[in-house]
Length: 250
Length: 250
Image (cartoon, rainbow over all chains, first blue to last red; front, side, top):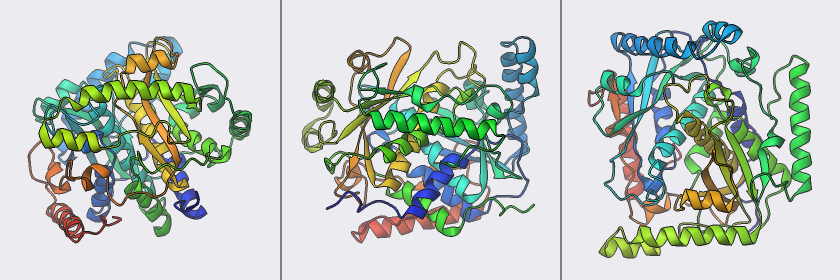
């Protein structure tokens, strides 16, 4: 039994990395074309195959086509967003107000992925120490769907500027069900080369080499070669950005 | 501009779905072979390219090789696991005790992905309404790494049966840094056909068609074709399981 036995072919492996590196949070580039049934079914199945604590599968999926409901959710966004803008001052507030942060009605459909916090009863294997692992599992389902969507050419935007209690009321959720992710889905005119908050100067990508520690917090990596490799990847990414190009695919 | 412009080729798309469907939570199949520097660097870069609220990038990565530290963490697991076993009765407790739930020392390395809850200051774009979005972002990084690892032939197991306060002390984390995911990584003898908790009879996979709602909770899907498609996928998966085979790749 060798270590290479279960590795994907190079081209299949590169396809997985491509989905990871070219995935974007989409707000402004939605096309109105509907997502075909087959594609949507594959995306939902991808989400449903996420890992979950104790195989709890706490997620549900609300496929939201209704324009009146989407307008209500957009209203919740506008209220929350007005409050959020007030947290910033001066140029930062101007920049914030110029950002488009949702595509609730522009996109052809919305999808709310919820977490049923009582699914499977009070004792879930693996959830005793950290009760929030059900929410974490639901996040893993979101990312499965997000990456599968990129492969399908479908853009996804996560709208997090929403009061969750009001959102739960709008969507008629039962008491134990938490609306974890409110997503906008649709085909797009383009996937941007960089995250929009990066290209608009809101915040920069952190050097990866600054984020990797050895054994315990703040200790240097034991493996000199790994530290060197991460630093050279950071330098390549920096060069690529300052040349005005996209980030490299890897 | 047509909707198909940004779609992957069929084979690249299938590679992404293969990673999603063949990913497993690995506890028992680890090989001792070290993960090469190049592979580990690609996995960390994949995690670092997750979406994050306000481009906050709240994650750090502790690459844990030290056997003494891993033994300490294993001790924390054993304490938490003994408490957890007592939550179950009779056959269920016997089954629980027979499950192997961690590969902390069997795997060649551990990786703790943390969330720095104060990164970027008190006001993070998109985080005002839901302060936990930093934790959620970190989960998305975990899933990026988990899927990339599958493509590399590397197994990942998430150990959630740990007291997080004690774990933070062991790893010398600063006050604002939360140890979100404690992972075991390594090449494997095999990736199981089904999640172990499913094949061991702990819990069954839920029919996807039961989890999809239309517009609001509990309402049937507007799209009859989608409901039909989900039901036929559930039936195919059920037939495949009762035939004793693996779940279909899709």
